[in-house]
Image 1 (cartoon, rainbow, N blue to C red):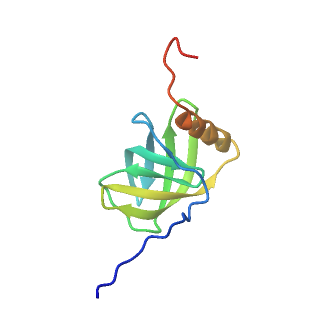
Image 2: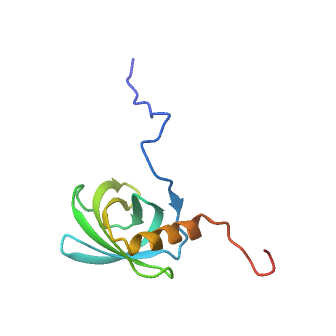
Length: 119
């Protein structure tokens, strides 16, 4: 009889995650290195970025979002290393000025796309 690991039927996630469009990018610094990566998904608690540069869990990162909502700067910790080439980062610090811009970005990403001529 083999053992299998069952996935829980609930999520530990306390915040809603939104998928990011191809146009959402971040400039990030971690372990003395700088990089620019596409954001895969985002929540009020953190984000997942596409990168081939794996970093150890627990390492600190500084993040600058490159978005039309304005400057959004955050500090984060590496929480997950994705085998598909990405990092899960948990926010550890976000200023009061950046928080509303992050909320506006999440609202924009969570809204259905609208085209000209459609209300």
